[in-house]
Image (cartoon, rainbow, N blue to C red; front, side, top):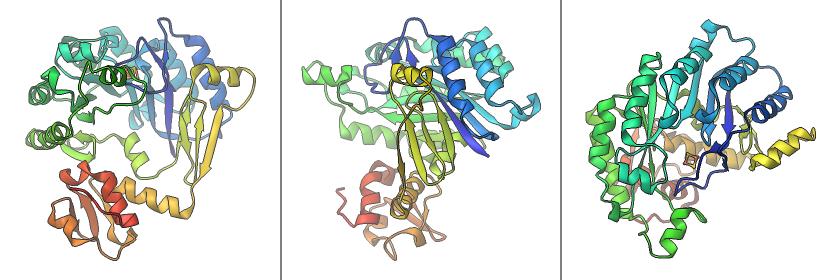
Length: 370
Ligand code: SF4
């Protein structure tokens, strides 16, 4: 049993902070895209999937019948009943969630939707170049529930530049008011060659502030735990029983298959990734060539390091026996960055804020800056 990721690279415009591999299109080349993905899939050995995840890009730009065709052909053995036990997630932008789309998605087997809400402040959404407003997010959640999709996640971005006067606590409260089952919180990062990077270079906006980032991250832990959410990974919190099964598979090192441009696959030892650009991917498939750009076989050393890194991202942490050191340096716990319980080392929210340094400390014995 594996996990299937399908990358849909199309977006109507580029958000100000985004450096993902996307293709900006007013009109999505639906037929070409679906045919290309199904051609790539034909080379895979037959198998059943526990989870399917349409990520992007903006998968909700695909018409519902294209999503239905992909699911039908990629899961040929899944009966309607079997589809209930598979987690099938669609990433969607709020403006694409109409009552008709939501009903069609549900009928095709989608049972979880991850909405790119980002904020409930319309000024902030405009600054981000998002094409929805806060009211559309609220309507989208209602439309999904009316269609029978109750497992809904919201993405929110924190750590925005001060001059936006974004009220993070208000956004958390509005997210809580919608009572979605899952929340993913991402700190804003400035990636090279994005509009945000250019605005900062010419002094039109400020670089996000580290203190604000840390303060908002810790505030989210505080508020969301009061509301009944539990952080089960550094960026993800859910109500009990609603963790993302698909993303949890990545963090526990399970095999997965990726289809579409820029998609990654992992068989337990080797990671492969496809050509990033839609055009390059499309041309490779049309010419009968493999769309794989490259691959790396993990050494035992790399696998061990990756297990530690992925484990520390999660609430379960890592077994102390798996670490390089016989016991973690006591000052990590004294600073309140880790907890040692039942033979496992787990990050606290403060620890998650310095996850990379912690992993270095535990594996390469470098110094951590507080
Ligand atoms: S919708 Fe998502 S993938 Fe598309 S440009 Fe915005 S952030 Fe990037």
